[in-house]
Length: 275
Image (cartoon, helix red, strand yellow):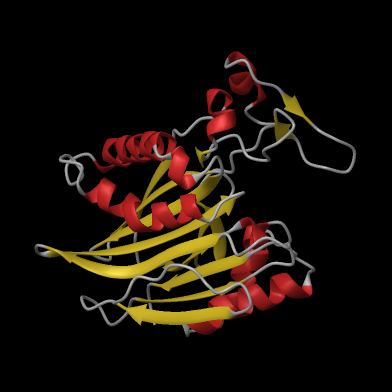
């Protein structure tokens, strides 16, 4: 299957693919630019990759802030960095953490080319259709449906919940009236790739989750905060639980977010694990 990157600022992009290992597993994606005047800053990956005798489903949402360059770099490099870690197959959690840190260091080193902006990220690796490896920085989210019940696998990294760590690094959390808490009064997430001017006060340490795929796990949703600002996890699951085609499901999520007045860039990937 193909890997995909970004969408033209004036377009909505959709697509889908399927596993070669199992005809039960397929994915769909949908992206739509938000109402902000800046170009589209959401990038993504959705593909199945054969590695020796293994099939890996690689899925990610990269939500840039003040940057197209950083999420585009992540789209092209992060999964390669993870899979090139020598202990990926024996200790995937430490491999993913190390790859995230190395990727962040490289982005900071390349700030002259990539700019001072940054990106949130949520990545999911589906290993042989049997196990999910999830990592994230920021507020893009991975949610599964098991027997119709939503479970969030990622962790939202919000300045208000990580205030102590930010202050320990010499930073501060500030909220202006009518706005969310922000690191140093600027960034609405406490962990991210890049953001060189704020990096002393931010973390690039991902949270990791591992989930076994059983017969009750129906589908996975990956989405940027353009979805989660206006929908709860359970509302998102309920919205698409009866839609079998994953591309149609991803489109439906985005349409519902727009009905609910989401103004941010919106990106959704749905991975169906059972027909």
